[in-house]
Length: 117
Length: 113
Image (cartoon, rainbow over the protein chains, first blue to last red):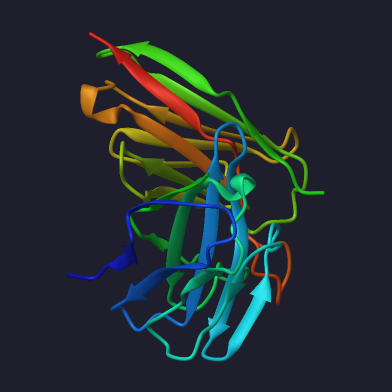
């Protein structure tokens, strides 16, 4: 089944304890992206990657790191989590980007709910 | 900046039509999208419309685009309980090399039996 898989789905951690949220897709997609969803704010993009070893900042990159060493994986790293990073995180992928000349459909993971105490 | 705005809540009686509205500030995107988020799940694409179209229909879904007023709407005919979800409008990149997809705040649709 074509899908984007995120782990963990739920995590409670404490301020300052480094954590990684993994994201993997099995569709050979070039484009991958991380979003956070907060009430009343919709989805905001954290980082995205157009291909292996190519990453770029989204709207809210502060406090996050990413890497794209392999095409299928795009982990989100919180080096020193803080309570304002408590949120619902989504990883998404598409064939070749979000599309200016042509529509590109994003496939989303099921989400990772993170609580930082 | 690029803003996409939606009402946060909508309640509709089962069997009626639902109309979810979206307004945006930057009209240079070539594609606009509607995504659906069911409880505990990620977003799934419902439909999208090219910016030179006024309307697109797909079974129970009708998308209307008014570029002059920068207004996008999604109409769901014969609304069912399975349509309960959060609906996000999104606008695509505004130029080549820009990979920004801007989402609205989402509208939570509640179906009244």
